[in-house]
Structures are given as C-alpha cells and as structure tokens.
Length: 110
Figure 1 (cartoon, one colour):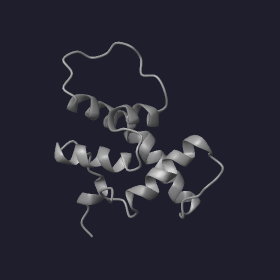
Figure 2 (tube, helix red, strand yellow):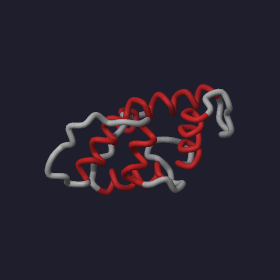
Figure 3 (spheres, one colour):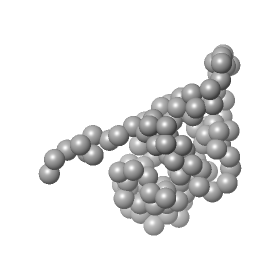
Figure 4 (cartoon, one colour):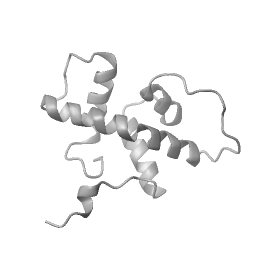
C-alpha cells in the first residue's frame, strides 16, 4: 500500500516511524536522513487528526475524559492492532470514510 502523496511504500514509512520511537540513532530503512526527518515531522503533525478520526469512526457515544497515555504509536495500535501494516490500515480506513487530509501539493498546477 502507498500512502497518498508519499513516494514510498507504507511499509518503509511505518518502519521508519517505529525505528524513531525505539532506536532513534539506528536507521534500517533505505532512505536519506532528510526523508526520514520529513516522515517523522509529517507523522507528528498529523497524529492528532488521525487519532481523532479513528476515535470518531468508533462511534463512541461519550468522549473519554482521561488523558491519552502512551506514545502515539501505542495509541494507534489501540485502534488498528500491533501487526505489521498498521499505517496502511489507518490510511485505508480514513480514505474510505473521506477523512484523509489532502496535502496542498496535490492541488498545485505544474
């Protein structure tokens, strides 16, 4: 699966994000350091939207008033599980429900 408007497979982005959380200095994904940093910044910037959309899709009647605990990846795994492909499952669910945030570059004429 490919993340919309990203040029790498979701598996590479997912591995880079997991790697950032577990061992920030070791880079096993085959990308440049600047690409790795952009992915991390992109994920950090979209995390609140993704978590909110996943929560909305659960259709809970009431919002939990307890603060969210754990890292962003731990909170995502609450919704989509621990198996590889978690990022693809998040994107697929959001795209199906028309909740995926489009990037500005998608609308720029060249």
